[in-house]
Image (cartoon, rainbow, N blue to C red):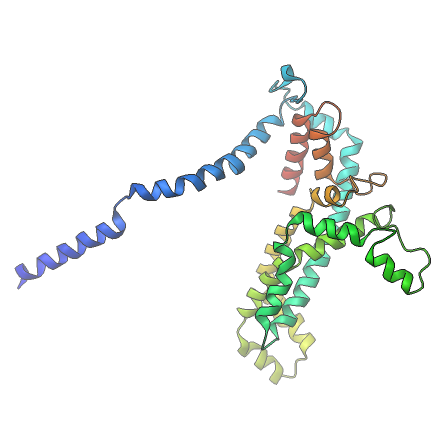
Amino acid sequence: MDATAAPPRKSRRRRRRGRGGGHNPWGYLFVAPALALYLIFNIWPVFRGFAMAFTDYRFIYPDTRWAFNGLANFREIAADSDFWQSLAVSLRFTALVLPTTTVLALGLAVVIGKVARGAGFYRWMIYLPVILPVAVTYLMFGELYNSRFGLINSVLQGLGVERPPRWLGDVQTVLPAIAASDVWRGVGFPTLLFLVGIYGIDRDLYEAAALDGASGWQQLVHLTIPLLKPVFALVLVLGLATVPAATESLLLLTNGGPQDASRTLGLDAYQTAFQLGDLRLGYASAMSLALGLASA
């Protein structure tokens, strides 16, 4: 009986090696294009930017490219008032966007989580701004904020406001206006993250809390929010990406104005590298690296 049982075990072992134990070269061939694109457009720029931060790389002066200058860029950053002003604008922008997005996303997730029918439609609607092209979103808000023909000021004038704000042309309103557009575009993703967390909470806990007389607000404060702490951590970490924001000002055509009120650190680095003076890519890379190290 032992002799007859051995061959089937060997054949099963052979089939198992053939299915998962071997190395199929075709698999590497199919993965190679995606891996190459990732290395070229994601990994290589990181290493190149890191190396460039320690050079006096100026695009219009070929002789200065890759001229190692040690920590000179970082010493210059420490004394650069424009850098610190841009950092302050970035922090104010983040202080407007991150808490607003987090609270709004949590509220939307709680409401959608209580919907019995049509929840999929609401999830799709709330996520739609995220998948819209970035240029479309901010150019749309640029038209909405237009001080003469924009929809927002037209509504305000219809309500009797004689002098509506110049949303993108006033120092006091430009940063909140840009922040509002960023919240509208980005609130969908954290909403879905909160929804995943809410759907993962055992319904029996809510039923037990209701039987104990807990109101909906008490259930939110003492049950939902504590159980969503890991989601809050993820949302806050991902939200720190708003610190070096530059796309908003560029596409809303403020270009950092008025009076540098919307000149974030990301925009400052972009202009230093591609718009101002002798295109100091090395110094701009050092600015980005300093911000990355500070965020870490």
